[in-house]
Length: 81
Image (cartoon, rainbow, N blue to C red; front, side, top):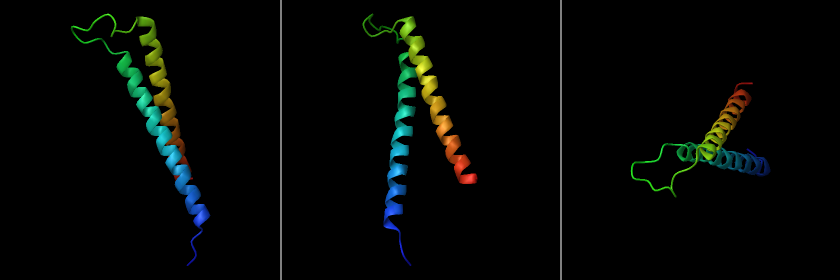
């Protein structure tokens, strides 16, 4: 039984990079949604975001989630095909 260590290392590297990228994108989406959330009671003016930046944060969050969905869908397609 021969193990192709170069191929195994390549698979490990690609899966590590893909995992970190997906987790990073999902985290950016969560952060974007939390920026657009309504401020808590008693929040100061310095901690609240404007309506324009909240809309941009929400749109960016949706883009991050769409990219995550696309990457996961592509991965499932590659497994099934």
